[in-house]
Amino acid sequence: MNEQLQNNLNDMAIEKFQKDLLNWFIREQRDLPWRKDSDPYKVWVSEIMLQQTRVDTVIPYYERFLKKFPTIEAFADADDESVLKIWEGLGYYSRVRNLHSAVKEVVTQYDGKVPNTLKEISKLKGVGPYTAGAILSIAYGVPEPAVDGNVMRVLSRILLIYEDIAKPSTRKIFEEAVREIINRDHPSYFNQALMELGALICTPTSPSCLLCPVREHCLAFSAGVEKDLPVKTRKKSTKHVDLLAAVLKTDKGKFLIRKRSSKGLLANLWEFPTVEDGEFMQMRTALAKYLEEEVDAGVLLETGTFTKVDHVFSHLTWSINVFAGSISGDIEVRENYLLVTKEELEEYAFPVSHQTIWKTYKKKVKL
DNA sequence: TAAACGTGGGC
DNA sequence: TGCCCAAGTTT
Image (cartoon, rainbow, N blue to C red; front, side, top):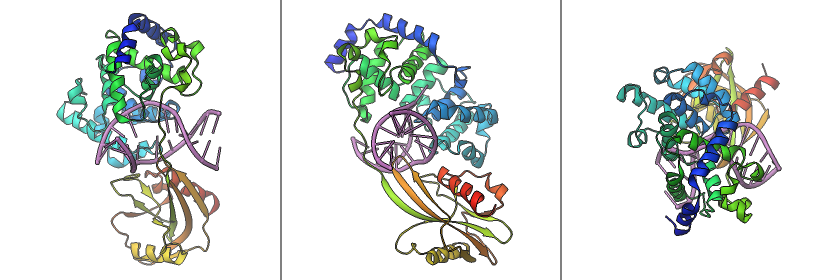
């Protein structure tokens, strides 16, 4: 450990810090659905949902999820389509694929009991260092660090740490610090209190230092540099992709949808047939011809696009121009395609961009 | 290590 | 509008 950091830790009144922090947490913590009990399965589900996702967004998903899958066995038995559907709109869909896979492993290999050791729990898919520490401390009372973005922000200020928190290697520095200051009698409260402080008081911009229960321990506050911390380099800008999509209806009123690849972006979700808007595909007739080959049937697209959907991901943006059209003839769709009624369509999981396409289609085109 | 991986909210 | 941010993990 860096010598300056070690000195700062040595100078810290750790017991007083713990007491101030824990008392504040017990008094001020939010009433959140995953704080009603410490069932390891429920803690696990909540921690996966909360990765890179706001509390307000997670709450309704968490409630729905546990209503549908109340026990670890119930979730283990779920089929892949319903698993994806309940995650629809939450983003980072590999989270739920990994969670499902890991839960099945726990049920078969650990008799349904979530492992309580760092070594075993860390082997589970989707359980990284943060989530491992969170489950161990919150569900089992094990004094492991659970270092997330909140903890790095809070401790960078309290301990005056100028390491770049955008770098993967930096997390270890904060884990070492937490190992020195964690309250070993109440690791669950301690870890949650650090995160809660980051969420409510020690916020990224304009922290509420005058309300902070541990400001007397905060080196950044003493030095008046709390707004300069944490140090975080920013990522580069996103790429742009132009797409063409088609909402196609048969004369029997069914719609053509397609399952995305099991790898990469939005894996396994469903979408309206889409192509990149390259040199060959920029014309409506070229798109129709392409679709005809895909479904081996006649495809007729309307003249103009009925909507344009712009969607921003964390690492790229899509601009989708969307046509409405019809399919006719003896339709034999390929493996990953499906013809469904409008009611059936709603049972499948779509990315938000294609939900938007569907809503617009229903509103201004035919339904 | 850097990049991929979603979405919605705040300013 | 555009950029940053939110209880990260995988490759």
